[in-house]
Image 1 (spheres, rainbow, N blue to C red):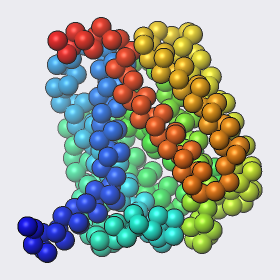
Image 2 (image 1 turned 90 degrees about the horizontal axis):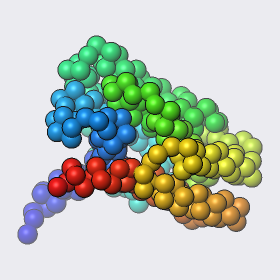
Image 3 (image 1 turned 90 degrees about the vertical axis):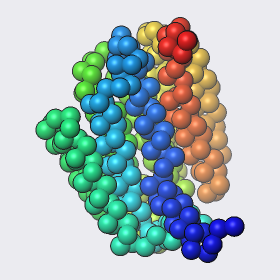
Image 4 (image 1 turned 135 degrees about the vertical axis):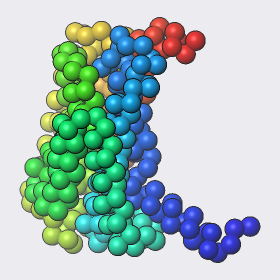
Length: 301
């Protein structure tokens, strides 16, 4: 049996994992490696990609900055989250704010050190990334639409770092990026509908608060329609192997999403819509493996 002290330590570790959203970071790390292997550098041997120290430190720096970003975001949103996510907020509060801020600075310092192994440009990029996340959390989050746009941009920044490293400028990569960016932006706007109660209490100026949920839903619907364009392009114009079935399934799911969006009016409905978009994004990461199924089998065998 664990002592009370050990139980408290375990709860605090769980709290810190919840604050930095460790499950999201693990998914981003996996996505960066899969994108590197199957999209950005498909002609390089598997060993050369996996054991590339430059790539490792880019991914490590990304993970550290994202973790610190979740901490500073949690720091600024503590009161709002107490209203919107009371259960998660109570778990997060097991770690005090001072410890969170200390961890935030340590993670950012380690990220810059990791980036310095790659190049001065990597240091500049991740320093700008750190500043961008702080400025978004401190100021831009409260600005309607701009806050959503910046949040989506920051979410895909780690992939931009890997993209620049491999210098692969094929059109298919930009179409993939457009699909991902639009879905993330739609998800950010869904979160505004989901968190409207806490946003009002904390005087946030989001689109549903200023213009109403109806206008917000119209903007989300437009983004979903836009996401269908890269889906069609990736199916009809580019060779994405068996991943074309993923994009076909996405189109069906996104059309269903539009119907559910039209019928939604409660927080639980918006949570479901948020989870649908999250499922599409996560399954998209795993579906990268099917761009070239022969390559997957050869590399496994």
